[in-house]
Image (cartoon, rainbow, N blue to C red; front, side):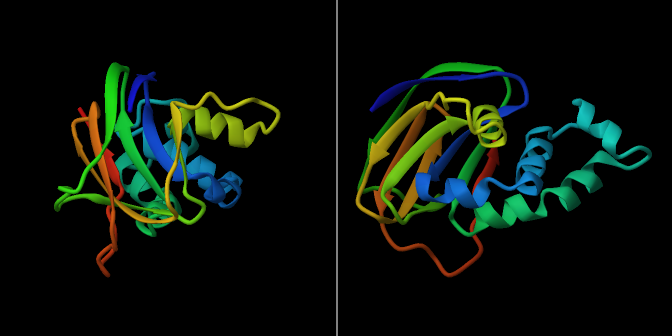
Length: 169
């Protein structure tokens, strides 16, 4: 499946099962996600933490969103000003290292991080999705080469903690 990705500054691409949106719709989680997107401390969020080192603040304040992602509920690719033609491909050759996504409802939603935060904070807004895809419920290994080539494969995840946040330069 081909799609166009258009991310602004301090943004990202999110993969999530639609069933997890209600759980993510928590003011503290959304604030943590805003902080997660600002990897270098260049937004106005830094003003909320005067005289604190941004790296320490970011590590501390994003713990809950990192745990949410680490449970396989969401994948976040951190991006900055990206407009690209991209492709999502089903594959049987997804190998380590990869990210793991749980799709209990089988409804994969791809959306920019900024759009997700805005639409969860203001439920009357209509979410502009990058794409939606119906898949068999279960766990999926997700592997990417950059942001423009993402592959997925249905399989069981490892027992270890998942790393589902990646900065792409």
